[in-house]
Amino acid sequence: MLKRTFLGLAGAAFALAATPLSAQPQTIVVGGKNFTEQQIMSEMTTQLLKAKGFTVDKRAGLGTAPLRQAQEAGQIDVYWEYTGTSLITFNKVTDKMDAAATYAKVKELDAAKGLVWLNPSKANNTYALAMRKKDADGRGIKSLSDLAAKVKGGQPTKFGCNAEFYARPDGLGPLQTAYGFEFGREATVRMDTGLVYQALRDSQVDVGLVFATDGRVPAFDFVILTDDKGYFPTYAMTPVIRKETLDKNPKLGEALNALSARLDDATMAKLNAAVDVDKKSVEEVAAGFLKAQSLT
Image (cartoon, rainbow, N blue to C red):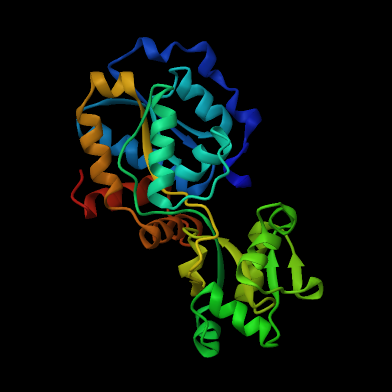
């Protein structure tokens, strides 16, 4: 997925290389990527570990590839990664797998690199197709198979997505093949990713490509259509920690697994919306959730 692939390369080359952080075992270095969900998770992890008595150095706002490289090099101790990103982007595995198999595979492959995948959350930030809830209810569409049946039955349906998804070999074309329907060239509108949410909200399109945990999904009263044939890969958000760090600080696993157990799609969408829609600070949102969950 593009947003997790090489975002913020320039900002990521940053000062890590000049700082021998791994030489400070008492300090846990928490990393994070450069979009809202990741900013929330790096801040939440920082506050949680500090509450548990750890000294923390937060290094948020990085691109995916440099962040992973920094962790493999021992400069980042822990951050939240997505199973699909590790499987496809880091380990170049393209086989179709369900959620459990994807997690088991990346856990096995990354163990050889000194990385431990802790317990996966139920937050799956994958691609998804969404509709306005009122429209979906009115048309009786709950799943992608329902949508395919309506399109094949001749119901006019305009679809909005970004140019990458329209063209990529595992994007719209194979999705339509898997479900046996086709929007048609004239019914497909290509636009920037962020504009899809606005276009769907304003009824300029009937179906839009979204990310499952984006805060605008609940904020704009969208409903995500069930991917009943399991077309989209699983991107379960999971804390990933260096084995050396975990061995020295075994209580880290317990603390992070407790947080992971409290996260799912709806929860992350609400947290993301609190920042992106309600304009609350990342620090405030993170602290509020940890307190509400009795984790701090």
